Image 1 (tube, rainbow, N blue to C red):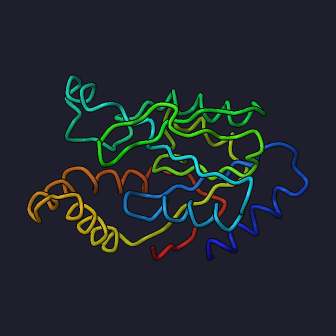
Image 2 (cartoon, rainbow, N blue to C red):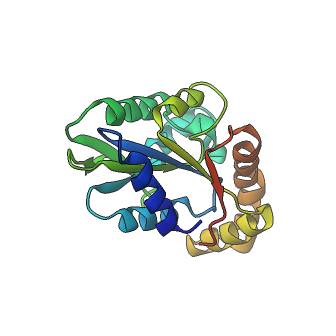
Amino acid sequence: MTPEALASLIRARAEDQPGRFLTALAGPPGSGKSTMAATVVQALGPGARAVPMDGFHLDDRVLEARGLRSRKGSPETFDAAGFLALVHRLRDEEGEVAIPIFDRAMELSRAAADIVLQEDRFLVIEGNYLLLNRSPWADLRGLFDLTVMIDVPEAELDRRLLARWAHHGKTPAEARAWIDGNDLPNIRCVQRESGRADISLRWDA
């Protein structure tokens, strides 16, 4: 399914539903969630907005205090309860909602860095753990109108992640160590512990 086809499906599903239509776009690290979300939002046009889960990363200082810095990106390194509260607001409130955005260049989240406007009806919420079958992540499922899982073979994810970390300045050895010690466990967590999505698709981003 192309992003344009997914956008058409979202519009069709939302046609008879009042209020905001929330689509969950889940997938493991390196699956192209952010790119897919941006492309779907562009295809949907005015009134659509992407909402990334990454804004709820715990700060590195908190992770270091908890001994979790080397596992950054795993489920326990996010403010899952805060993210759940945000999705409830997006589901229940009609007005503007401020959302945090993760700044990858600075490696930290910026509070209220974007605004979901009152007229934003189609929200594409993207993140690794949107369909995870563990508390409190499992409480998200009932808030989504449509769930999508991006399916990419592990070997391709590995290739993409090596390129990503090289781009961010890691040496090949550093990238390999980070992927093996952190990204791969997170990939397998998403693959093995996520519930079934309404749609499973391949995205060659």
